[in-house]
Image (cartoon, rainbow, N blue to C red; front, side):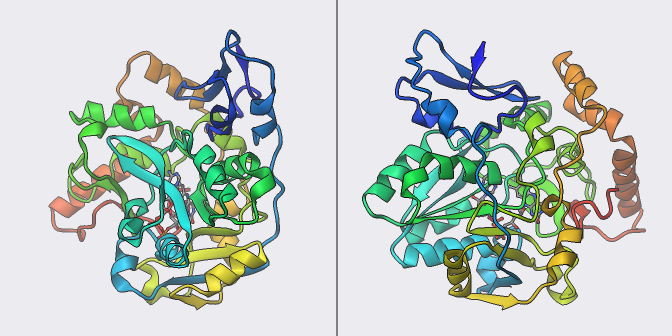
Length: 381
Ligand SMILES: Cc1cc2nc3c(=O)[nH]c(=O)nc-3n(C[C@H](O)[C@H](O)[C@H](O)COP(=O)(O)OP(=O)(O)OC[C@H]3O[C@@H](n4cnc5c(N)ncnc54)[C@H](O)[C@@H]3O)c2cc1C
């Protein structure tokens, strides 16, 4: 089989799929990795796919020139966001100024990308989706709009920002990019399997919520665990137990970034009274990014960058590949249940959650929805 990039490096950004004039490329999701497969009978050897691929041609990273922590001045908007509402504020400001925004939505069980130029639709992107999303053919649409002279803001995972930057290489003046600090993504097939084991279909959900501020748990229409206990999917995600192979060697998990603006959580903030309502961390790598951030309807406060990095491991290094990864996927292939596999490999975390649930039931512990995290790894490691 011929593929666009080296095995286990493909991030599924889909730039190759978008650019191929013959529709010869397919992203094959093997759960453990993504393979950008070239159909040789359709291929005309133009090499556009290989040239656009950020694995083959990495995007240059830049040091942040300015950094802030903060939160949306609008309390409702902030409460509907995962963190301090930076993404939503950027979206609304950009649309109000006449531009359009491209980001990830959850619709019909799929985590795909849409372009929005109407404030009425600015809410469709809200919330972190802790799964590998699929940009599909959206880069082509973005490039067309840039060529027409429109301003476009792209918000996505760092590898997807790399994809859009390579795709629009010669037309980036009006392109603004925001990447999320990211500690890795599992294949959507794992999320599907998890739901299926609980008798639900992702495609039947109208909404999905992976997190309520600093409480991490899948909730919304359905519940998977006893009150206060974190579900096994969230345990697997937070412990980095089942990302696709490329995530463990992510080239973008460092302080130097590829985007105009990087957003994430301001873990370890000294502004403790704001923590439960969500505080965003914002890093600006370019003057245009800085200008945009400083124009937002946002409470901006200074932040100690070195401390923020210390609390956010993904600003330093990719997630550590678990020693059990091969066995995890072998177990999955053999038909074992996702829940059981997570218990097998994350026993201590799972037992902790079961004890917590028991203590809540016995009124010895106060209820909250999932696992309270004040730093993705602070309490986990
Ligand atoms: C997989 C993943 C891992 C993350 N890991 C970390 C981390 O280790 N440390 C940290 O500080 N922050 C991390 N974040 C970012 C954090 O969860 C918040 O999304 C971020 O702080 C922005 O919050 P917000 O309140 O500004 O906006 P939100 O309301 O969270 O909006 C998020 C924006 O990102 C887009 N988005 C959400 N999920 C995806 C996705 N799967 N693919 C592409 N775009 C998406 C949405 O469409 C929206 O535009 C991660 C996010 C994701 C999706």
